[in-house]
Image (cartoon, rainbow, N blue to C red; front, side):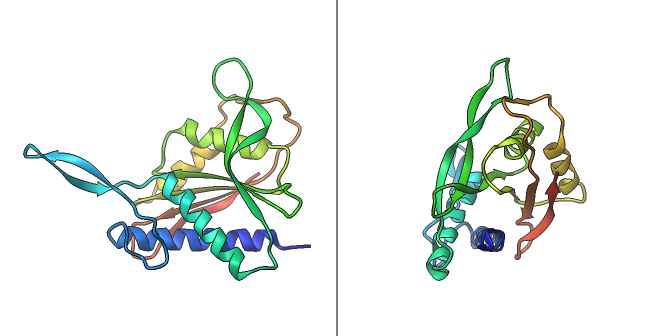
Length: 206
């Protein structure tokens, strides 16, 4: 049996390391990627000028795909595929009164095209709902052995990891069409505060 978990977590580690290097290189200029962090534009003394780097889950997702492709090229024995914005196999009531299908940010599929892993990406510690709904979907999807929630933040303090985990575990009264499947979710939160990425939270929600 293939060790999918080992391969997936190697790609996650490379992704976070590469993004941190990109962030600390003023947003771009690494030799082995064309991805950059763009800048916001702000008005200063009546002029539109470049501001701080824009960090979002989109850079996280695109870098993950780049690193996944590179990793698969170097490890030909691990033959997998990926899909983005993958329709959920379950339906959910996350807002309002009706249940509807949603999407998973990225899924990794095996040679038979069945889903192996489900991944949600986040950036910059958004709302409790944004965290809790993704954790709920990951837990209650029907197909896929591994489930990951990956988040990046630009900086952190002594309470950041605790607050993010609280949001992921929040009970919001969400419902799923099929509630009898509940899977553990691995979460990884990385901070770009230093020259080397720092994993500030890593555990499993059961």
